Image 1 (cartoon, protein in one colour):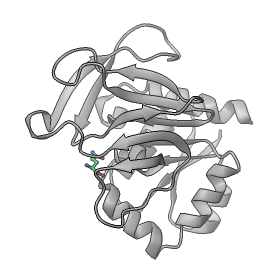
Image 2 (tube, rainbow, N blue to C red; image 1 turned 30 degrees about the vertical axis):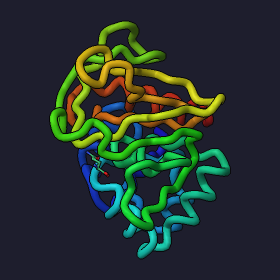
Image 3 (cartoon, rainbow, N blue to C red; image 1 turned 180 degrees about the horizontal axis):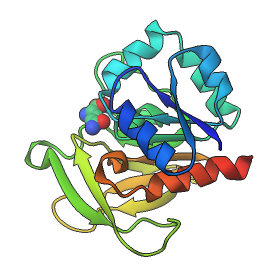
Length: 201
Ligand code: GLN
């Protein structure tokens, strides 16, 4: 099975490893440059993007991961991971950097106080088994403000105050969601990512 790394600096690392294992990949922890080089794909978990950003600097992983993404390593980011994959960030803290790789503008903590955390059903394009909606959990989540021409929008919020907001995108082999499939039990997005990695074989 493909070895898929989970960036293990901060955030819900275990949940992603478990999800990847369930989907037929081998989830492995990534904390060092040589571990980045050894994996077939990489997940950047949910957590706190400002903390993960600082730790990327301390662990000297920023440049190796940027280089790997540029060279075509498939990457999936959920929530804080989406923030870290954005080429452009709104609402970051002073000095906050991203890894980039996705030609999008992401707004951090976009949903605001009233809907700090919420759950909703989403239609997600391109899932392995069809049209059943995905039950999505959002926790102080970002949304995508603007997408470049090569970016496919996979899901938008269907109703409520954030209706129409973009919450799942894909550009080549880079996938990102505002929500956390790793904690909702619906692992079709992880299956999609494992398939992306397997297809590169
Ligand atoms: N608000 C967090 C951040 O800015 C993301 C929240 C999450 O990953 N659940 O990184």
